[in-house]
Length: 471
Image (cartoon, rainbow, N blue to C red; front, side, top):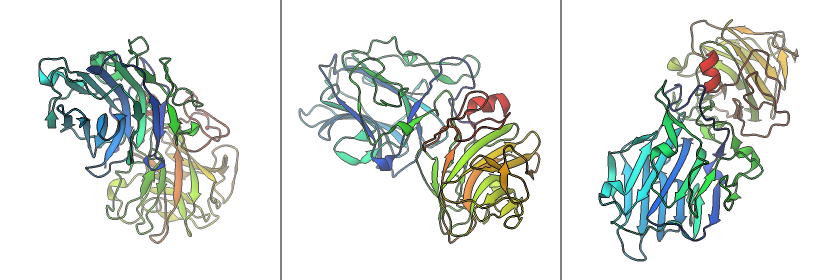
């Protein structure tokens, strides 16, 4: 259950990607448009940055890019935990393309750069399809069938689909995607889309606006929340299906935001259910340690997050911080290492119940619980709808006042859950890029985040740029 600084995330400097698109596979999201006359069906390049939110069965496709239907097609997709590039040409009987990586894509906290560059006019088969992950060309494959020389691929014709497998509603992408680029007419070098940072060695995106996109090329940057299918290259926009303005996210490959971590499974037989880019969690009603914890662990600095209670447990829904994740067996936020407030007004100080109304007050469905975590002074404060607890049973303070003293020298994770094994809670997290609508739009002092209530002075949202500066 890794809680790590996600890969391919820079703290500062260089080209910044402002937005991504967050999609939930259960919503059946898709972007589509009809193409014109192609520049080429032999030379083309697809590039994107993705952060996965779930991992389905080995045979399931999480679609990124798809031309045409099930008979004649070309697609790039996650195939279980591998990446697959496939072309089927049943209409004219030419050789199919099927390349599947040995590399596994299982890290839900990391952004991946994916570039697929095709030129069937190359004499060497392996040069006809080049796949780059995080700037490095893949050379190890589980399946490796290349197109014939000078083969015309069924690409650049009819409809182009993003995020879904056309004519098969079971295959949708789940997670975050940005900087989607399609080049019609050339097999581009990976350096057209990114470069290695000279200090960290991390592959990072560059400005692609100057590329030659060809007749059917396009570029999606998701910077217009009112038109998330906008082609920033000036071509025909994509039509959005089951995608709305709140699906625009500031969680990107240049500033990676915390989410809930679905890999935190202390009881693998009773796990929480995650959705909305791992910002929504439904706790398992048969497991008390079925919770949602942040991907980013914190040891220093001052941090702020908001958590909206969507469905309340019959007894006690919980919101707080936890430091004892390696030893979580039965209790979590209400156990040793847990500091939390409960929906019935109870609270837990390092696992010790304070009793209803002795530290905080009750809260209910649609209330937003704020956590102000001060690891410079080892304190945690809680608010309800913008008002902080006074430490005597009320949420009535305009700024952080009542607090629990934390155990020093620990790594803390923000999280939610419930107390009882027979109950379930539903929460949505806002670590700075929420999956639910915000009416106020408050940011931290670095101008990061989108919060319903004011961020306390000196506190910051949970993203890797802030973490690099203050964590």
